[in-house]
Amino acid sequence: MGLIFSYIWRTDEEEQDAEEEEEEDGPWSLQELQQKCRQTPEGLMELNLQNCGLTSVPSSVFRLEEVQILNISWNKLTHLSAGIGALRQLQVLHVEHNQLSSLPAELADCANLAELHAGWNSLSCLPARYRRMTNLKVLSLYSNDFKSLPDSVPLMTSLEYADFEHNSLKGLPMSLSKSKVKVLKLGMNQFQHVPLVLVSMPSLEILDIC
Image (cartoon, rainbow, N blue to C red; front, top):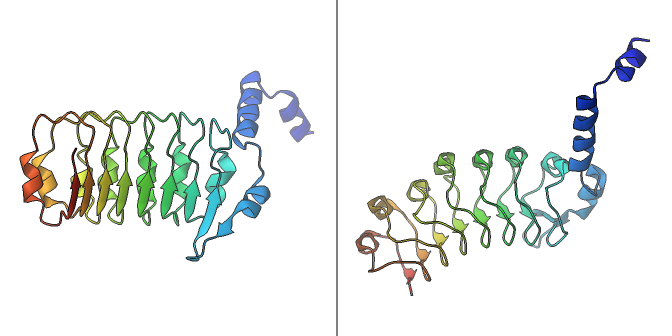
């Protein structure tokens, strides 16, 4: 009787929350998403939801703890849930060609993340917690709205490849001289002259600033 009574008197707000939770599950159940996972030739577990017309990431995705590569590019995402931080095995994230204006700080909880591809969005900053991404090697943020280089970038101690082409950068911080970046892409920005810090980057091998 107690259970029946509780159900009858569930408020309109609770009903709405329940409906929103159902919507967040999206078009696939957890079992269906598991069936979509494929192993790459390198032996990594990949979930590819590219070009699926998604406006949000199904909450069940964040329960797939075995996923190492997640591709949610070419969708209509305006928000990426903090739930992404639950994917502790994640190594590669593709979110290119969406409508994101920010990325969740919780992505820094994915300690194994080695590649972040987020080009063609509307990003203008990165969370300060991203300085903790000590295993990140590839950071691709071309065609966004960055007016300055995020402070966290020079502190990513394993970063080797950084792409900031097609942004609105006017200068670079001197802290970049401590970076281990080998490939730096800065073309199509708003530099009036070549930033001096570039000659102080000891590991830099390839520079594109045209």
